[in-house]
Length: 494
Image 1: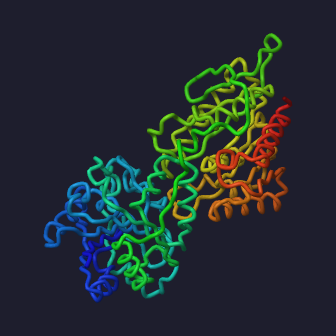
Image 2 (image 1 turned 60 degrees about the horizontal axis):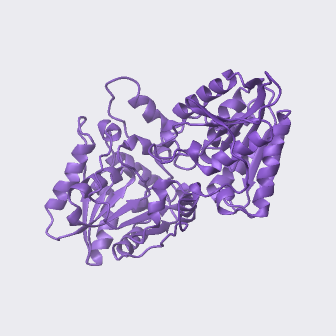
Image 3 (image 1 turned 60 degrees about the vertical axis):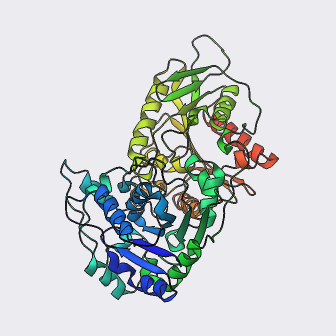
């Protein structure tokens, strides 16, 4: 039978696993909850050592390492140290951290980010009270006495456990993995499959045959809300079961050709913005411009960078072929904690674009895709006069479940409901087969637009998925892209 090493998320200790460990032991499996060191000066490396020390104390040659929430960081670190001792790594309702990521990127509570960034000597993070655990994850399925139990056993989280980067060498890359998703938080296997299909490089490896997925219809603490079901899923995961995902065949989807044939145009690179220029016209004429803002989050080392993807090149060249500068902004949206930095990058790109002598600075459109949709909030909150159109294509328009680390300002729906400003025309292109958690943000945005009588035009792609230009290059998709580009350019007077 399998032997499980169970590591819990922030503030908690091994006692949180009592019911699950008892159930596993009843089946004949081994179960060893870990209590991580919580002294104020502990860091991530301290917690890695805690897990390594427990594994070394066990007789079985291999164990199943289970990391819940933050604990996936010390679990991965321990697996790197002892890959030959780890039969499987189980990600329990957690993220997919990469080399160099601090656990802070997984923290949904903005107050924690403010506390850790307040000065040069961060303090331990106080544990939540019974009424505050929802800020760290869905509390679906937890009774009041269970929330009180969480707070009773909780202790302050050492700050350096959240800020020290995870160091991965690839030593444990061959270890099989399983993902257990708690669907009350908004993430489902279907949503993960959409991420695999849409092509961000860090997600394509989830289609490996050694990766299996499970769902639990509960909140973020299944060891309390559904201990028997969790124990059963852990046993199935250890046995190699789980739903397998498939990635698109061939090259990554984001490198596929654009769905329209458009001529290549002269390109000028200036800092964070690339300009694709129309045919030369009248001397000293200035063209209107569309700034395309790529989606994300994306890893910092993706190659080629998004502004060199055929997808965004196609949009920019198409705009240039119709008489406007098609510009592509490069921005550093590498994680959900990067939205403020990314917004600064986009602002810088806009300033460079408007300062270019070939561009009419009073006729600019901004076009946001996918996860960059949250960046549109700033331009809805305070739209400048030069902004003639704001386009959104299958956008995320409110922070998704578990995205509490996104600053509150990045909520286009909330921005839309504010009073006292005149909005530019809004153009929304939505996919009929959008993933439910993104579709919910779009629906809420449309409702807010109707209530506030915002000037919104909607282009529907009924049979389109997220990223339909790549995955569904159909006549329906081509018509939607053609209409969207021509609509934006009409607002620019091009």
